[in-house]
Amino acid sequence: MQSTTYTQAVLDSHLVLRRQLKWLAVETVLLAVCFYRPLLDLLDFTLHDKLFSYIPLIPLISAYLIWTDRKKFTTEVCPSRIGAALAFCAGAGVVLLWWLGTRAGWEIESQDYIALMTLSFLCFFWGACLALPGWKILRDAAFPIAFLIFAVPMPSAWVDGIETFFQYTSAFAAEMFFAVARTSCLRDGLQLNLPGFSLIVAPECSGIHSTLVLFITSLLAAYMFLRSASSRLILALSILPLAILRNGFRIFVIGELCVHVSPTMIDSPIHRKGGPIFFALSLIPLFLLLVFLRKRDFNELKGFPKQARLK
Image 1 (cartoon, helix red, strand yellow):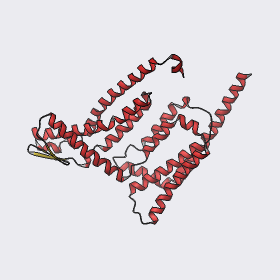
Image 2 (tube, rainbow, N blue to C red):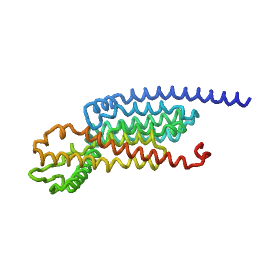
Image 3 (cartoon, rainbow, N blue to C red):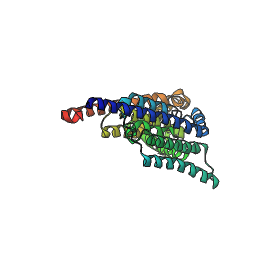
Image 4 (cartoon, rainbow, N blue to C red):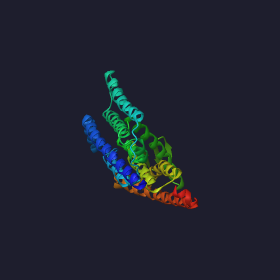
């Protein structure tokens, strides 16, 4: 009797969840209709902007992660009215901020407008998720749902600040590589004065696109292959020094070629189109760190009592 009651309760929860997911799909379509113009602008922007060309993949990755982990999610529907209201207010607040800014004569750049509208759309979508499937399912799918934030382009001021940071840190790292190689190098800000040749670390040399892609890759790898929060944090934080060293090493290689081969190497394919090569090289230490952290997590899990592991 108890088994029959339990089975019926499970079936009922599945039916309720399926109905809520259908309503979520309908509400998502309605949101897309309301935001169709900003979403089309976002798609056109990503097709013509190299830095954010990865954005169309973000919803697909989130959907894939949810689909592959769907059996691990609870089927209990627990709507959160307060959470949904806060998310809806945040989405409306972003739109209101843009409207008031434009009314006050704020000349917003296209990239910033798209970022604000995409963020507003996501807030409304998260609110719908909280209002329909509920917070317990959102808790189980926290990473795929939060991962959607990468579909929002960074504001232009952030991009400029990050580029400047990587320019100076990469120039410093390159100077250290030249010192190790015993190549004379006098750095003046972003200019590296080498024997018979000078390099200027331009914004294009900041590697912000590859660094952002590498960071997103590290988060995905941490979610899929690591278990402890400390290991995931270590892998994500390793991207910053890894990106600086990669950029510095690339500048160092180009500088060495210009000094010891020919100054015309500054226009060679290794400079103009060599980014993917150095990006691939940066994946090697990232992969080794991932293997080490995964092994550490496995050893820690082996040390737990069997009862604790089952929990």
